[in-house]
Length: 617
Ligand SMILES: Nc1ncnc2c1ncn2[C@@H]1O[C@H](COP(=O)(O)OP(=O)(O)OP(=O)(O)O)[C@@H](O)[C@H]1O
Image (cartoon, rainbow, N blue to C red; front, side, top):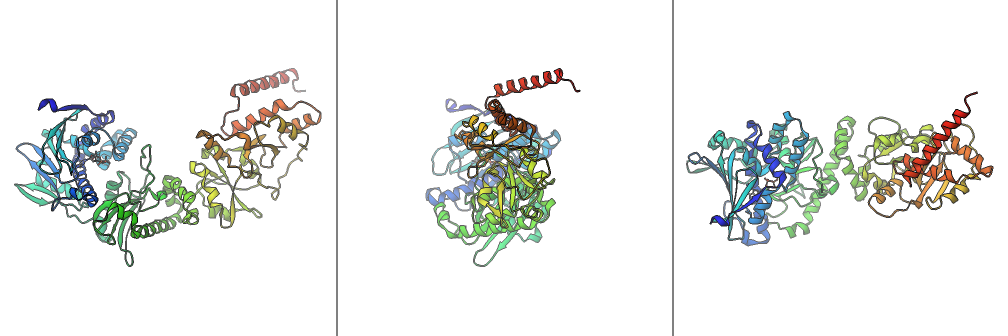
């Protein structure tokens, strides 16, 4: 028998996690039970759902979770009749960190102060591995529903675990905890009941604690969302939110309502108060939980559009049969109607809350970029969403809305100006803004990656067109600025155009500059500069040939070149320099960085020696 025992090492992250867990503060240890009971209840939910399309997996009568303390043996056993795990699943789920919740936890731990760590453990839970807070050895015996063989997983939480063939009468899982000497309190039935009532009361599956051979239900099983609002405390809402989202914040908004009439459902939704620690591959689908008459069905029903995926919670309906299958979920019109109702409710809540600018700010900073995806991809909600958008602006600190921008527009201003880039702070200093600032024209500053895309789709707001100031020429002739007359560039421009014909589509003068000498812009009709930049970074060929080099005719350098061109001097050397300066200014590299540096250094040396030779008169 012993030769069939396989030894495996934990993944590196598991090792680190176990270290953290084992050294956690004792006061937080009780949450191990919440985690194991939640896993057991989830396993039963999954089996029920899979059985809808595969009757061989059907649950036995009266499925439940049993929590069995044994003081003599100093063990605590948590048993379920859930879906179970086969050998590969045991290794995968209990040997690596697969789930986002646990990953997020390790990241939060790494980033938090030492004094916050204990409460982090309490709020997050750490899934299965929290068992090692109280147990010196954990044995898991599991049989996957629909299979004959069972497997035993065992570990002392120190670097490795074993896997061996085992037997189990029925499908399901037993988790046997060999308790540490100082964790005997968790063998007291009363204590176990209290913990379960505190943490797992919203679980509808019966959770039985066995005392003197008798089973006693520890949870009430009233799903929180089914209780009247008046009976639910803020704290109970917040706890449930943390449990659902694997987060540890207080919700920014709690929406709890019951729809009655043609469509019957109860919804309890949360908008988190902080951004989740997103794993590398952030899934775009909403994971709102669908329940039918309290029973969990699935969290893959996409009950909200992807641009509201930050909303967590539960929708519980009477309008679907309990035995609804995956296929049925895809076909039923009920879900589409619920989706519409729930989306409308979330949007109206956001609209109400957006009226209080200060209260709206944290929401916007956490989830604004996600909301903008809706403007891009959801024609039905685009106009409504536009009113919820907030922006940085060239004219003021803080966030502003499109409506406020329009209210501030100057007489004669027809368009809503905006500038897109990577970084709000850099945008505020961009030379592209000079001409607008000089004329008192406000420009919105957009710095989320999605900002390269959505403005084109929204196109206008309250009848005012949205206008990127780096795309085509903005007509500023309505708004005159004082200053010396500009020189005539008729001789210079054709020479520069010829010299740069490989690099840009055109060279022209612009009224958009005041202090800077040149900028790049996109040709009218071509994708905006930021979009071009993103496509180049993504490896898409996007020649600079569609960019336009724009010169400030009043700049001393341009004046000098204009005079030189008229006098028949060679200005082509400076042409490349102007283009490179415009590129550097936008945060791009010059076409030939080494050559650029050489030319600048040589020019500086010229200036120095010129001023040394001809001292001030
Ligand atoms: N009693 C059980 N029956 C069947 N599968 C289980 C059981 N307990 C754990 N698992 C499997 O092990 C996986 C890992 O569990 P663990 O508690 O570490 O994380 P989780 O519950 O998935 O997510 P999180 O880390 O966010 O809590 C689960 O997703 C599940 O697939």
